[in-house]
Length: 365
Image (cartoon, rainbow, N blue to C red; front, top):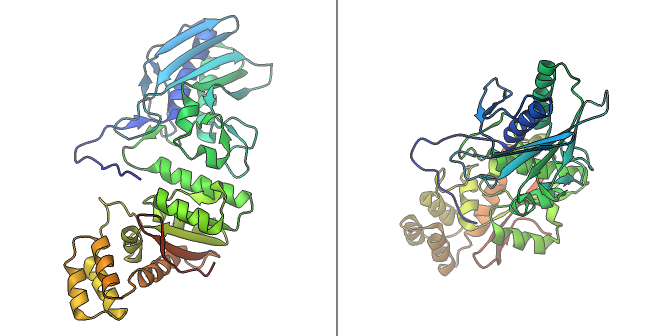
């Protein structure tokens, strides 16, 4: 898994897919009522901000109007940055209110456990609320009923979705329309943590009793093979051990396996909950002390204390005949249990080398 480093400069915030869909909806609905396409179009976000969005494309025909906005994620490395998000609006039946459809590139929910029911377009509750509020405001302006069908589409959304959690969450056909504030904070990693939470929700709804949180592709493949887990039991934890463990504390599952490389698991054993290299680092003194407690001598401890990397420390312990991986894994289990705080979740840890071989695991099977 490649790491994206946060620049040491002020970062520009961006807009969620939900905010973009709302802007496109407002512009299209305004045009359908004879008022033309406002460009830029201003919307109100849940916290009261009123950003304006330029329109990338407009079209209209008999009984429908369409507007599109290009998503600007600011300086966040968001997979949907630059995507064209469009809304096509049509008048709905009297008294029908606002209804939503998934256009090309927007997914459909197929599994229980998500905020949206199976069979519904993958447009989350807050974006739905934002679009409904925009429709009602324009309806009041023109004195018409707020009975509208909104179809949201994302150009290339199905290909984008393959780079997200959607396939594992049971969202097929495209991306999700997301956002709780309308704003993307650069490098907040909120979308990743949101996906971890939704993965847990889906696993719980499906009745799974065992899930795995992995730090990268190699450890994920190892734990999948070891326990024959389905894809939707595999939680792409990445560096966000805290995001995973804290959510499981209040949304428990019977068993969690945390799988990762030696360095990442060492950080967890030290008590770090964000395992990114820019936010935590391996404490070689911790590893030297662990080696001493595991039967190593002072010479080994000195070698480990002066090592350049965790991998070098592990290799030195192996040469000396000391199992350093096992006590690190056991300590990581203890740290994870401390975050779980007594919730009914049995946690075990697996450490995997760079070739995908299991170095140690704290569970029997």
